[in-house]
Length: 117
Figure 1 (cartoon, helix red, strand yellow):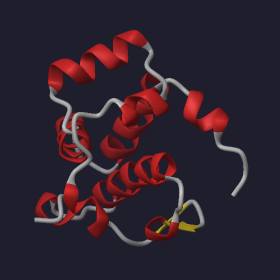
Figure 2 (cartoon, one colour):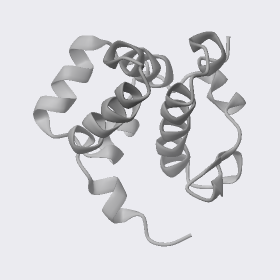
Figure 3 (tube, helix red, strand yellow):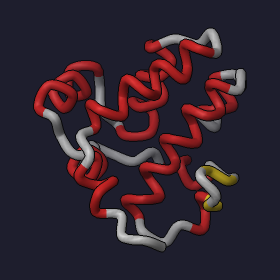
Figure 4 (cartoon, helix red, strand yellow):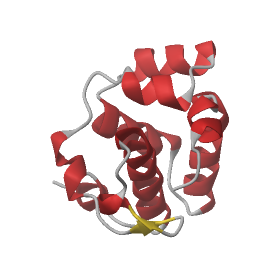
């Protein structure tokens, strides 16, 4: 896999609006995007807001996450040409997990399914 340092250094605040746009284009909401982020990372609204304001890198955002959801390992499938369950690097896998969940949201999947309930 290529060098991911550029992706890791990207501020989460630059990716976050893209997730929201993607969801809203498909009739989903910012609240649903936030719910997915909270579920995956263990952040809450206040801590998410802090990271957005501080320009936290994707790497720090995931490394400092209170808890990556234990059910995240149930997330399977292909995103950006990679099978998420086969990505070796934990950080990259967590980033792709989030991409995949937002993708499922945009494709109209019900929240219970997205949140692996």
